[in-house]
Structure formats: C-alpha cells, structure tokens
Length: 242
Image 1 (spheres, rainbow, N blue to C red):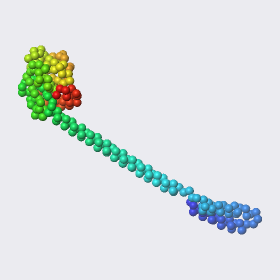
Image 2: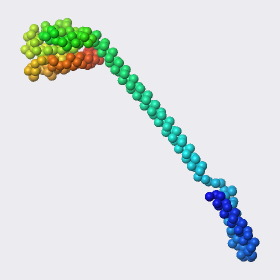
Image 3: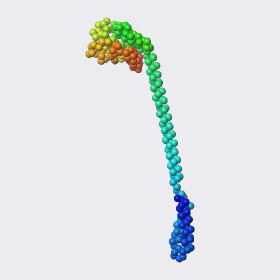
Image 4: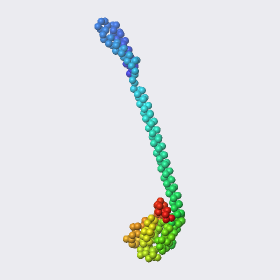
C-alpha cells in the first residue's frame, strides 16, 4: 500500500509539472493543486512514521507466547503440587495401615479374652489362639464376676445357654452378661447362642455390645476382637484394667 501511494504521488507530481508549463495564466491553478498533492503524498510516505500493524501483531504473538509460558509453568506447578499431595496421602495411608497392623500385633499379646461357654470344645477359642491372641481363655461357668480370671479380661464372649448355674441365674448366660456389663461398663460383652428362642425382653440384649449366632463364622468373632481391642486400647479404661 505504501509503495502504491508513493508511485501515484510521483506520477501526480510529474503530470502537474507538465500541466503547469503547458498552461498559462489562470489555467495554472489546477496543476498547482495537483503538484502540491503530489508533494504532500511523497512527504507523507518518507517523513511520517509508519504505524504498521505488523509490529503490533508481533507484540501480540509475543504476549500470547508469554501467556502460554506462564500458563504452562503454572499448570506444571499445579500438577507437581497434586503429585506431591497424592504422595503424602498415599504415604499417610500406608503408614496408617502399617501402624494399625503393628498395633494389632501388640494387642494380641496383651488383650485378655474370656469365653464363658459350657462347651469345652468350642472351636472359636482355639482359632483365636492360633491367630495370635495368646491370652484367650475359656471357662464352663463362673463363680463370681469378681474372681481373678473374670476381672482380668477385657473382652467377654458369653453363651446365653448352659451357663450361670453356679450363680443360680434364671436366664443363664443373659444374666451373666448383664452382671458383667453392670460390673464392668467399659469392657466389651458379646453374647451368642445356638438357640433362637431366648428371652427377647431381657435387659442384656440392650446393654451388651454385640450379639452373634453361635454358628457364625470364626472370622466374625475375630473381627470383633480386633475392633474392640483397638477401641479399648485407645481409652484410659483399657490401661487401667490390663
């Protein structure tokens, strides 16, 4: 565009000069105007700064590049931050699992578990011992809730049928379980039975911590032991009764 204007200005300048000399008198007014326009056109192209849009476009490209660089840098930092957070969470999760496992191993050595069951061959007792719960014991009945083998336990499993005869308990194991919970409210009492026709209105059903069928999977008994041993260990009461 600049070159075209320059060429047209030169042409106008040449024509005006020729026209000027070919004219006479007042007829020279029009070629003078053409001459002046030609001169102005030339001066405009050579002396007025060129405000081309190209540099502006370059500036915009540079700005876009800067923006892209900044965005990329910020994105990279964000991804690095997220990765670091994920590593921390993952590490914390692994640490938590490791800590829980270590704590359970320790609890196996210190938790006293007592089964009150008239069946001396109840298989869950042996399964718990084989699983590492070394202080698991079983008695056919109890003489008192204050005797040492009862008082030392933290977790009780009480069969609600066939026990409580020594204490002349009318509702057998339900009465034993209720007495234990009243005597040791911070300890865990689990009642179980093979007989579904028990006194459903007995208070023991409400106050005891859990109830199971006697033929429940041994794993269910073990999970309760794990859960309650960790709960008791986190409380001051557990340390006071160990």
